[in-house]
Image 1 (cartoon, rainbow, N blue to C red):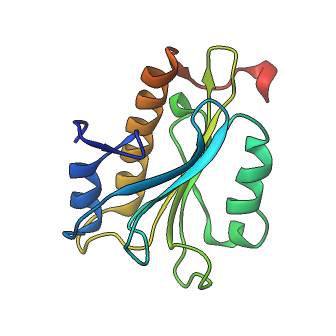
Image 2 (cartoon, helix red, strand yellow; image 1 turned 90 degrees about the vertical axis):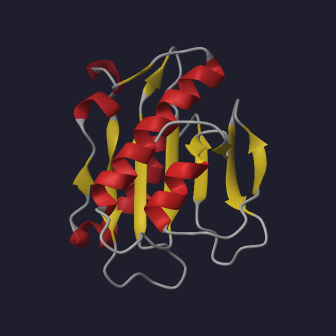
Length: 160
């Protein structure tokens, strides 16, 4: 699933289409800079088949806001340890402001502790959203490392 072209620089278009079943035109719009923080959506599509955000600070706060608090009742699935700290959250009945398929990861890349968050409004019938979001995040982390000349790794004990 990991091949160009990439949407938002880190998500393979072919993989996103497989996971979501979306067949229309896709053109991404990014605000912010990969060096610090930002977000990315698909232009001219509502709802956007992919919403992606990233940052270099406050990953734990973002994780708590998105998968903690009232959302913890939906039992987020932890990401594999080698991907850092994070989880996949599938909302059975999300509020209108949230996509039902959501993943966030905080990891180490050199001296930085970046986080990436992505959400999908739908997953194609018959797909496993937890597996698919985990796989998409794994690719996004790898691409982040390529873009920043670093190797993504889990957070160490000093990071916790």
